Image 1: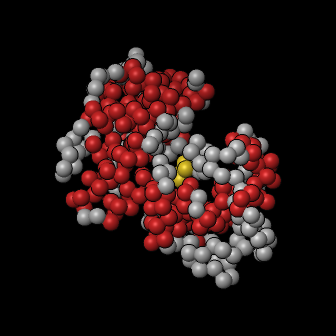
Image 2: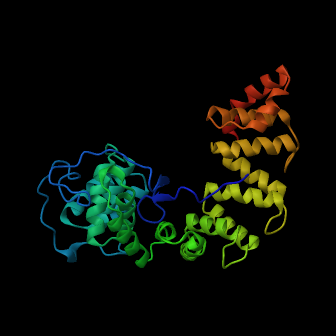
Length: 348
């Protein structure tokens, strides 16, 4: 199964600090979420009351010496990571209003995820903006992505790139993936893969799964300067897959089936694809249906193949070759597949 990474460039949002939150893909050029700009606000300025819960005059910054420093124990973040979102918000908001950049970032995360507060990307951007301007690298990355993409009514690609660059300079692992895409877009077409690879490998070395996956895709095809290297691509896919990158897990299964870049292992490919399929990912469900149909990594089972394809179709993910398979089933097989399909996502 082929998954093209490049084409429409993607930016992926990692909510908060490393280890916090999920990620969501955003297109650089094709995302517009209309937001009413507050009076007096410009495209790159969120310094008004958009995120202050009605407090148009937040308190003056407290003594910076009283703020937590990087590496200090943070009760609010601890509460957040433990699922006590109300406690996290109540502890962080006074600090955020007083100018604590790490508390501001946490408030942004809570608004972006809708934890204990109504979901509000606008307020999240406001607080990310305050924290970014105050120097928090994590917030600089998120705010940079927001204004680069023009999300939530604020668009300034020059400032967005600058904030993402600051996050790179601060060593935020995820920032290299985003900055690499920007550098690719700014480069001549024939130089883009090599430029992207340099930045993606840096991010991969710091443990970012998206950067590792992007680097693997480039190495799997080669560049003008670097020959195709399936073994290195596979190692990067393994690293990304082990960090729960769904795209890498699906791609790695293909490498395992083909014996590309290493030993062939159809059983491992099957186990990996089934894990992703059970998680509700339609492309994996389609591929798993083919594995059952063809007996790849498991005993061939046309009913199970049909059941998994039915699950994918429920998610509006059809496939011509599997439609042909379905057309050849007997009424009894279709009945059995339909019954099995209702319980597939309950599998261990």
